[in-house]
Length: 234
Image 1 (cartoon, rainbow, N blue to C red):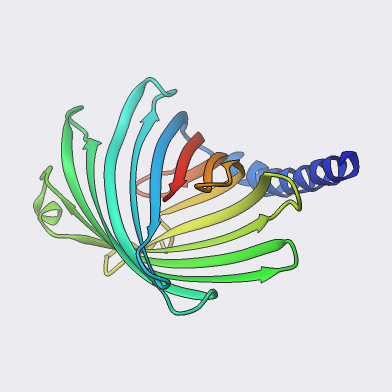
Image 2: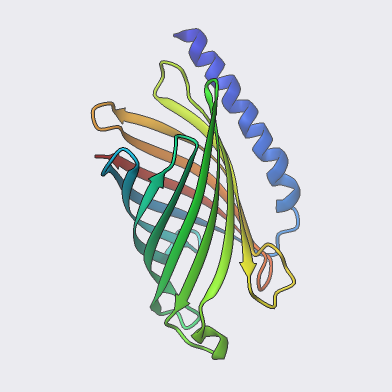
């Protein structure tokens, strides 16, 4: 048991070193920095061998975690063709703070293409998400029309043998689509975290992660985020 703990600590240190090697160079050019905390709860249920339903809710803060930036409810379905590939769709109702310091609804629709490749104790996964967003806070003419974004997420997770804590890393890029922006990437996220299984009977778990997020449009701004999510598998 002690050897397993030592081995896990060494792997976590290596992963943290990788994240710092990526984070430090890009954070040096930040023009604006902030801190936020995200609180989330999600529930997954298998309807059939191939179809899953997922419900989630989240509150996200900013301005040094003093104000709520957005809160949302999301629901969706996923269909697994195999243990390596799945597609899904979901809808998210979001309430966002806007430039006038008031909250307005946004509607988001997602289509996901997901893949997974287990290698020994590791799990490597990818996801391409096509997102449509509709605003209800209208400032100029372009706000009346939906905007479209392609999201590319890559994740590596280490399944710790005989231990309920699983460290992981992921990166996610947000690419504006069908727009006049010359910037190919509108936002990037880099994250490191751990999943902790707290109940084998219902596969309940808690995920805690650190996220570095850089927004490029309309100007460069950075935010450091602590995210805590409680997940229930029914």
